[in-house]
Amino acid sequence: NAGVTQTPKFQVLKTGQSMTLQCAQDMNHNSMYWYRQDPGMGLRLIYYSASEGTTDKGEVPNGYNVSRLNKREFSLRLESAAPSQTSVYFCASSAFWDYNEQFFGPGTRLTVL
Amino acid sequence: DAKTTQPPSMDCAEGRAANLPCNHSTISGNEYVYWYRQIHSQGPQYIIHGLKNNETNEMASLIITEDRKSSTLILPHATLRDTAVYYCIVRFLTGTASKLTFGTGTRLQVTL
Image (cartoon, rainbow over all chains, first blue to last red; front, side, top):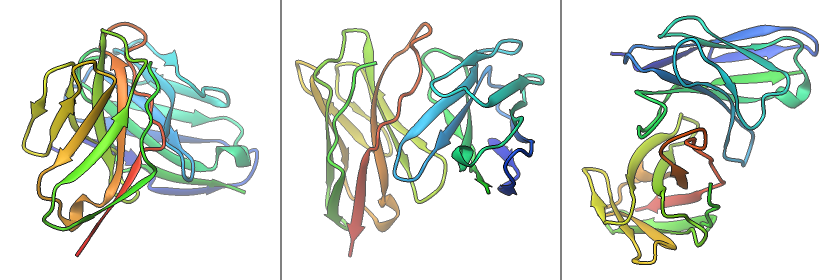
């Protein structure tokens, strides 16, 4: 039982490049989330998927798109990366949107030059 | 979600109890108090949550004041591995507002 896995662990992009961050969970959870964490700050919610087939914007969605590929996988795409998107990205999942604690992945460290 | 106020940092000697305070004076009746921690650069880890009664699990105890305007997370016997940033979060458990909003937390340093 790996929990929440994220790929890649590290990535360096040039401004304007695109990439997709992958997230998968093996806990049969219904809800999945993407957060970003900037230095010295708490996590901020980018997008979430309360259940398979639905996605919604969080606090800081601009510049990102998401896809809930199936129940296990939730990807985050940067279409045209900007230096302001340099951050650590965490994926999380929970059994349901309501009531349940979230389990976090190890994070992806992204640098945009 | 109600805002929370936590001290930016605290120290604790190994083996002693670590008491981490949190103020949430604008909490509503339907909001729960959650605690997460983040060790070094790892993903946050759930610790405990409660509504108004005190709660205890294998990791910690949560003490919520009777007026619910503040709470304390207690790590009964802190170890070096408890060095982390601890986040106090208040959240609704249902509906579109049911999301975690992280502040900057308290950086707990456990020393020998």
